[in-house]
Amino acid sequence: MSQRHVLIANVHFAPFSYGGATIVAEEIAHALMRRGGYVVSVVSTCVRPDLAPYGVVRAEKAGITNYLINLPEHRSYAERYDNPAVTARLAELVSALHPDLIHAHCLQDIGTGIFPAAEAAGIPVVLSVHDFWWLCERQFMVRIDQTYCGQNPVQVEACKGCAENYWAAKMRFDHMRDLASRAARVTYPSNFAKDLHERSGFAPGKGVVWENGVHLPEAGFFEDQKARQDGDATVTFGYLGGPSQIKGWPLIRDAFATLGRDDFRVLLVEGSLDGSWWKGQNFADLMGDWRVVPRFSQVELDRFYAQIDVLLFPSQWKETYGLALREALARGLPVIQTDSGGTVEHDAVVEQDLIPIGPYPQLLCQQIEKRLDQGQVRNNPVPVQSFAAQADAFHVLVEQIIG
Image 1: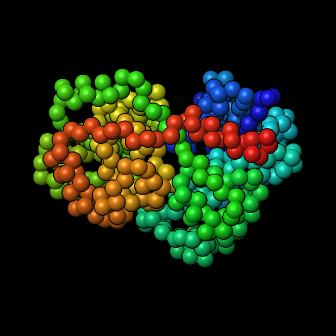
Image 2: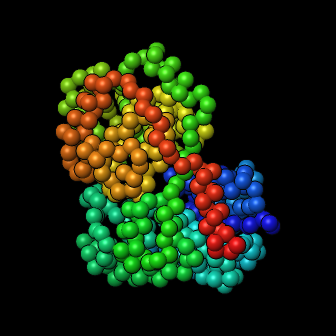
Image 3: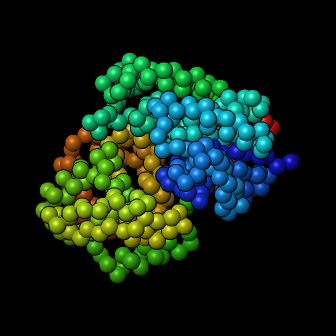
């Protein structure tokens, strides 16, 4: 079989990575190349005032060429989802590279121009939905007051309270649904995400659930975890969501403020690129041992997870998947989580332990108390899909489309 050339479109990509969806896009690209039969190229974006607007910069890392379209800092509302200048660059790249298939991931800032560019060249597009960008101009269905919208199905008429310009939002909504209908397939990481989109009129009948993979624990992880626990009996909680309301930080703070004991440690991951997440945050009024730890790469997952006993995942919106949550479960770590959409679609979920989304610090506090009373517990790892298995599933999808 001749090699398949897949062109990946994602707002960020190595060597300039950021965000969970970018991790998925990158890992699948490398997994496809490892399995053989694939060549992978990438188109992504950058914002460089020292370069010409809409110029294309070529970068390469780990054998994958990344063509970055340089976006001007100031762009109109419409240009952030349908930019003729970006579409022109995309058409030129598609014409020059002539891939067999385009895999579109997060297209914010790239925009929907990848579809007409692909159509002009007769190339099919697989669209992978990672969040709610296609349904919501605010990307995460989070209202201005930082609470989850909760529409299901999404009806743009109900967005008037959030949209700065309702008619612009409606034009966007209609445009997005029209463009998505041109995809050969639309993949979703969970049944929740698929059902919500299709009920909202988004590419009905074209959707498939394509569950995200994770980096599974390496050999030696459980020995390192046990050695740390044997040397330090302090129950350690981990949190990766940053000081964000929608990720549940205020809920965490309020819960621990009422705990009334100090026999625990909390590791807060600094996930920002510039060290700004936890800068200026004060934990002096909270009991226990609070530490901010540096952000880590995928190859450093085991080192971080071996340091914690429980993952805190009190998300305040209905997420499409929950990558960190699956990483923890694959390593046998208990998770304290909310009833947050696609994050509950795993084998370890216990329905009565799920915390409802909302201002319920007392319920979170009860779960924290329960874990502290149990002490350090090592659960059996939960079966979670690897990136290699996810790439295998994508290969099957590719063969269905162009095989």
